[in-house]
Image 1: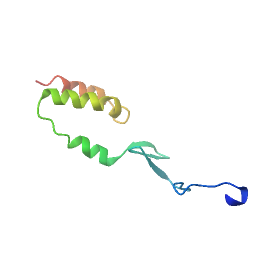
Image 2 (image 1 turned 90 degrees about the vertical axis):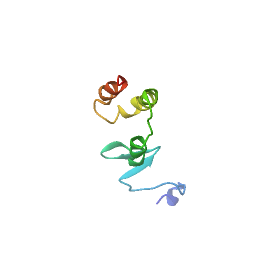
Image 3 (image 1 turned 120 degrees about the vertical axis):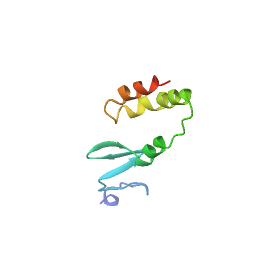
Image 4 (image 1 turned 60 degrees about the horizontal axis):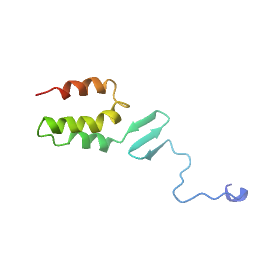
Amino acid sequence: MLSQNQFVAKKKCLFGETSVEYRAHTISVLGVEMDPSKIQAAFGWPLKDVTEVWGFLGLTTGYFRRFIKDYGKTALTLAFID
């Protein structure tokens, strides 16, 4: 059908997919979801002291608040741990 109408699809093209992986996200009819491997990487992040916790929160807050309800509130409580 494509070639009959002089269209060309690259080898990377997929048709009829229900979800696609794009930049560590899964995009489907359900919406945009985080890649499960990225979530596991966040859980395995080594944190030794308070300054590393603050650094981790700085890196993750902007990203995870989009996917996790009230992430900012939870992260804020971690920021004040002594």
